Length: 329
Image 1 (cartoon, rainbow, N blue to C red):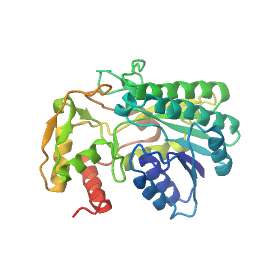
Image 2: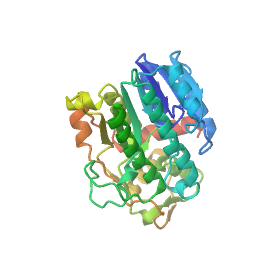
Image 3: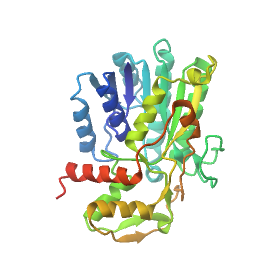
Image 4: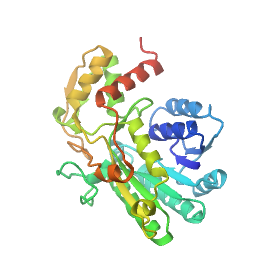
């Protein structure tokens, strides 16, 4: 297969690209290597991917339409997995324009490129987010729930992506699947996510900041399980799943279906590091939610998705990677 992955230097994109390359596929990666977090980590991921001869990399911004078109022309993809985006709920309060440029304008460019390549693109998979559920209090979150009350700009852009993809799928018959990711973690993870920030704080003897006074639950999903779900869906466009030629759009939750409290999560990191953490209890952050919990019955029914990694195993693997990568004695 020939696959284009946007955000290939990012956390999920890197792991997906690596698996597809190991399986013998041709992968074109697209990324702008933004400085939202340490660029050296992104470069290190790319170096790992470049060890595979079937990988090519194109640097560019999503909002640069000519660069996006070039990536499609260069890779001639049969499948496109769009993972690049301006991430982060809290950062959207500080730099909202970055979210419109990358997540709205950039996604339009991806959709337009797919529209111009409908003869070759068999399936577009794109990243949505559990953030679209906003302040929903019904747990677990189901794809049948209303998601028209986002409480952050980031969430609003992700819901907009779903609406845009639905419209393009309907108008131009582009097979599209949106994935609402739930708190992905694991080796090579993002430095702004909980596993990373908690580990870093403990090793620096700094307090771990727990928002909502520690009363938070997250459906932490290990990266290998996420990748397995994406791969399972890749060759399963909506029409094949529905057994109907008129079906062009799907959206799924992809999570662990087993939320844990942040206090327990911190405790697992403490155990693996052999150190206790000082805790600083903070009020709820604007745009944040107290709990996430994925109903994964749809994706489990359609492609057999079943998370295999417990949070205990996942944290063990993450801390092992962190200590090796940052040479922690």
